[in-house]
Structure formats: C-alpha cells, structure tokens
Image 1 (tube, rainbow, N blue to C red):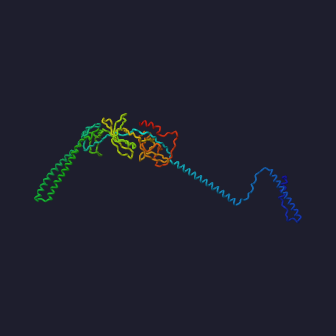
Image 2 (image 1 turned 135 degrees about the vertical axis):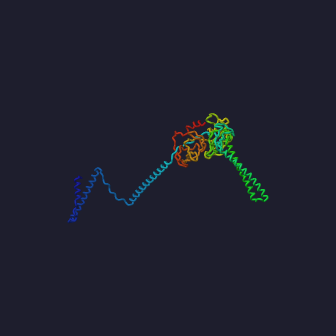
Image 3 (image 1 turned 60 degrees about the horizontal axis):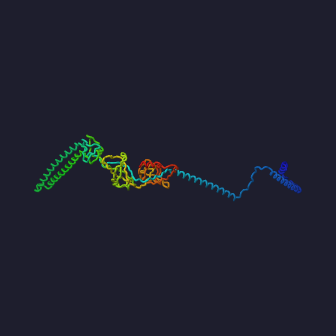
Length: 464
C-alpha cells in the first residue's frame, strides 16, 4: 500500500460518521451497517499494512510501555528492602568511624609512650686482687693552741721539725696573768690573817661560855666565823693554784712525738687562750709513723676483709714499689648510703718516705668469686636515694634498681651488684623516668654494636 492510500484511509477514518438519527428508514440502516463492516475491514487491512511496513523500518527510540501499578504487598516489600539497605549502609559507616577512632586513639597512645634505647651489661671475670683508692693520713694529728693569753716571746721549732714528747715549742709572755697571780696571793695572806683572828676569838668565847660569862648564841657565832674564814682560805688557795697553772702554760710543749706540719705565729703576736673564735692555732703536730689509710670496701667484698691480714699500698710517685700494710680495723657495719665497709689500713713509715695527705691505692688479696659486670657511664641515674639504673622488664615497664659501683674505667663502670648480663638497661635515661612507667624499646640495627663493647678489652688492660 502506498503513502497516498494511507493518507486517504486516514482521512476517511477521521471523517464524521453519519448521524444515525438522520436515517429515515430500516433499509438505510441495513445499508449503513454493511458499510461500517466494510470500513472496519478496510481499517484492519491498513493496520496490518502499517505493521508490515514497520518491520522493514530501522529501529528508533520508542517510549517504554506504561507498566501497571504494583500491588500493595510488593510495594511494601520493596520499601522494606530499601530500608534494610539504608540501615546496613549506616551501620557500616558507624563501624568504620568507630574503628578509625580506635586506631587513632591507639596511635596517639603509642606516640605518647617514650621510646628508649637499651643495652645489656657486659660480664667480667672475677678479680683475684681488689684495688681501692685511699688517702694517707697521720696516725695522730693535733692542732696546738695557747692555754693562756699574752704575747709570743719566741718559738723554738719550725715546720718539718721532728720533736719528741714534752719538748719545748714556744714561750708566751703573760704580764696580766702574772699580776693577777700576785693579787691572788696577797688576798690569800689577808684571809690567813683573818682566819687566825677568828680562831683566837672562837677559842676565847668558848672559854667564857664554860663560866657562863657569855651566852651560847654568842659563842656559836664566833665559832661560825672561824669556819667561814677556813672556807675562804680554801677558795683563795684554789684560785692561786689556778693562776699558777696558767703561768705554767706560758711555755708550750709537744703533747706527743711527731713532726710539726704547720706554724702560724711569729714573735710579738698577740695570743688568745682557747680554740674559739678569738683563739689562734700555734702549731700543728702530726705523728707520721705509722700512717693510716682509710678506704671503702664494696659490700660484695666485705666478707673477705679480715683484721690483721696483710695488704699492700702503692703510690704514683713510687712506681713499681709496694709498701707492706696491715688491716688494723673495720667499722664492722655497712654504710647504708654507699653500701661500703669503712676499713683502716696501717702502713709503717719509719724512714718518713710516705707523707700524710698523699693519695694511694690499697691492694687487697681477696681471691673472691664475686661476679661483676660493666655498664656504660651514660646509663646511670643520679637520685637522692643513690645511683640507679633504669631496667626495662619483659612487660615493657621501667624498674629503677640501685647499683653497687666498683671501679670507674672512664667510659664504663664496674658494677658489683644490682644488675645481671640479661637485663636491658636504658641508655641516656631521662630524669623524668619513673618506677613502672611504660616505654617502647627501640630495635638497634643488626650491625650496630652496644656501647662499651669495643673498649671493654682496652679498659681491662688499662685497669690491670
């Protein structure tokens, strides 16, 4: 069918049908029905022709067909599924946010925990010889002061002089004491005269009392006066003896044999009695044979120190020489502050080669099996309770342990107790570290060596 025929048929379809009310008769109505059937058949043929034509036309955009409305039950199901999807999405979002906040909190907490570097102590072999520092002191040392006031007339011994006990050292002029002694002696003579008169009066009144010439009260008064005069005489005698002793202090003598190590006065100097603020030291006398050496033995070696045991003392000014000494005494108690035993060693010094005040080293042949370790110097903490080290435990918490220090090698310290080779000690610990504080341990590179390992052999060689 052509396009022109299609347009004609369409025009016929759009033409208004004749009004059935205008049909005058039944015959006309029957003809009209036949005509309508023919028109319907013609329309069907045109529709079929259009369908056949559309099959050979290229596809184009077509309007989607209108779907009928969904039933109410299906719509509710779709809405429920949509709500479940929205709730699931919201839950996932909340879980993601909570997980992110927890991770941020853990990261923040991890950042607040300090990270420290640790080192393990190095173990050492036990020593057979314990070497400790000590100062040589005079066995006896005494400052000498004047016991009376006056002026120095002359000194007879100077510094470095060896004197014996009772030897005259100086002489002091005491004019005031001399005059006071004379006055006291004169006062005593007056008291003696008064006492003699009191004795005569007491005897006389006692005779009169026997004849009832005087009352008993008057006789007792005379007897009491005589006794008072006796007491005054005893006081005057004591005062005279005191001044006579002060006169004896005009000459200064050596209290024991030794060496004068100091002289602080010259002739004509004003001398005040006593050792107070006004007193002035005249001489300093020291006994230098033998000499005392005080040293502090660590607690780990205390059981091996025996009184009477032989030891040796060395001094830097006498290289290669050892002076035989004897352990004289110990404190028999450990000092709680330093954890050491105070020990005195006596060194004979007959030739006077050793000088008091010198610094030396005491060699104790202990032969002990005390286990020792060394740690770097920069691992030690100085606290009011004493030296400490910060040890990191298996739980990552800090433990502050007291240590017992032996010898100082410079870059390392010998520790006689408090730590073991398996402990992890914090290097360069901060002063703010506290007991039980949580820390992170930094892992050193594999090729990095712990401080103190490279110089350990050198330090041992230098100490030996």
